Each structure stands twice: as structure tokens, then as C-alpha cells.
Image: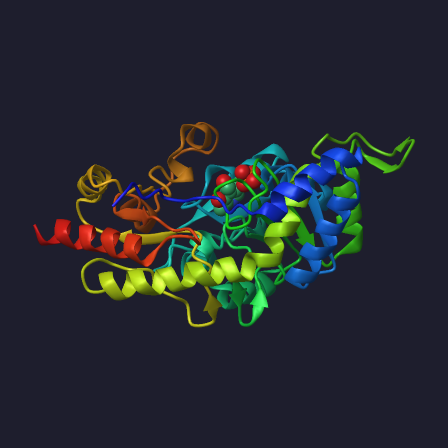
Length: 360
Ligand SMILES: Cc1ncc(COP(=O)(O)O)c(C=O)c1O
């Protein structure tokens, strides 16, 4: 068995051809490809608008700026997430409040309720590893307390909750097309989805130097635009994303049938359709298992070894807090190889290797 990587990007001849066409078109930034990609993303997600930006982080930064939230207000988010989840919150003068996880590694609604204060303004649940957070409970709490919700869908394009795509459930949501993601544009890229036209217009203006028309700058904005080559790549991938996500789900089923009872395998929420951005198991002696698999040529990852609330950048600003379930999980979780082209043989070899280690 050759080496098995943790993840691998999707490629096709259609993508290569379309990139060459864009090069010949002379349009490079926010042109017809970007416009079509935005429309197609909005249709796919079942929302009115999608506004592309150069990353999730930029898109959500622009979104929070456009929402004009009172400085010092608190935003509740999980700590078991990629570090960028917290950054836009800090950049617009808001305070992150960290919430512990439930058995699916997403935000725990019970802890969420406990952490709400008179300063709470919004909630940023992360649909981690490709599975929707417990949105029924989170949306009920938000409604009861008058809080907005921004979904972090960086890892979950195509995932569903109660039959609806994640990213379409709340006022707005953020997506990432970074190279490791289920839909990638071969570089940085992302954006926001919303049903609110005025919010979308404001985000679109801010990303392009505050310009609402060609020669008129209404406000001080940013250069957080998207480009045509990457839009062409994204459009080709969007056409096949359901097929690619379906393959991931099949691989996950195979892993779980081979590993169930040996290690903790992912729990699937009843109302959720998971898209397995990551296939994450939980084990004792995680670091030893990781070395053991590495020696067999199996790539693994830890998402994430240091939770956001323990990062120096955060503790320096907001002090120390304790999240017992998150802190326990980060020492035990391990991401196994997961990408659409993974073969049954590779899954079987990885699972056999895990079982061999556990049985030693
Ligand atoms: C959950 C989550 N949120 C936010 C981000 C940030 O995305 P980007 O790199 O596009 O800014 C990522 C990706 O790293 C992520 O996985």
C-alpha cells in the first residue's frame, strides 16, 4: 500500500480548460465568472444572495462590519474550531465568549444558555467537520433571547439540517473555499450567504473599497475581492459537490462499520446530513496511534490540538476560561484520511491499522 494522504483536492479537465479560457478573456477580478458563481451558490444554498470574498475570514469580517453591532457586545462561539472563527469578532470590537461542545463536537446548547449575559448580541455556531450543529436548540435559544445567528459553514458546504442546506437557516453565514475544504478554489476564497439584500449590498461595497458605483466611494472599505480564475474553478466544483459529498458519506459509513466498537466513531445527528469534511475518531493514546499510522504511510490530522480559548492571542486579550469537554477532546481526537477519491482498499488498510494498534 502506497502512502495515504489526509486529504486531496479534486481536479478535472473541465477546470483546467475553464481556467485557460479566463486567462484569454482579459477579465480577472469580480467579472462574469464571479457573478455567475455568486448566483449559482445562492441557488444551491437556497438563499437570495451570496457575496464572494477572498476568504471566510474576510467575508465574515465585512459582514460583522456591515451589521454595525454595538462595540463591546458579546458573540458566543465554540472553541473547538479553526482559529479564524474568532478573528472577525475581535477585529470589529466585539468580545468572544466560548461555549463547550456536545457529543458531536459542535456547540453545546446547554452551555450556550449558561453563557448568555445582558451583553450577548449574537451566536456563531460552527458546523464542525461537515455536520450541522444542534440548530433546533440554538435557534430556539436565539429567538427567546433576541440574538442573531451567523453560521460558520467553512467545513460544511452542502450539509443539510432538517432538509435545508446549512448556511440558509439564519440571517447570514460564512463559507470557505480554502484548499482543504470540500469545495476548493485552489487558493484562498470564501464569502457570505444571506437573504437580506441590503446586508449583501453593503458587504459587496465594503469588499471593493466602499464603492457602490464605479466612481463613487461612499465609505472607507477594503480590498477583499474575489477573482475570475478562482471563480471558474469553483463553478466546476459546485456542479459536482453533491456527488463528491456523497462519496465522502459512503467512505464514512465504511470506516464506521469497520471501526465501530473499537474506537469512538462520529455520531450523526438525527436531523443532519453530514458531508464529512473530516472523519474524526476518538481514542486513548492518540499521539502514539498517530505515530503508528504515520509509520504505515497513513496521513492523519488533529482538528484541533489547541482550542481557540487556549491560544495566547486570545488569553492575552480575554483571560483564561475553562471548557472541560473541549479540553478533554483535543487530547483524544484524530482525523483519518478523507477525500472523495479515497479507495475502499485505503479505507480498509487504515481501519485495519487502527484496529491493530488498539489490539496491541
Ligand atoms: C471552521 C472554520 N472557520 C473559519 C475558517 C476560515 O476560513 P478561511 O481560511 O477561508 O478564512 C476555517 C478554515 O480554516 C474553518 O475551518
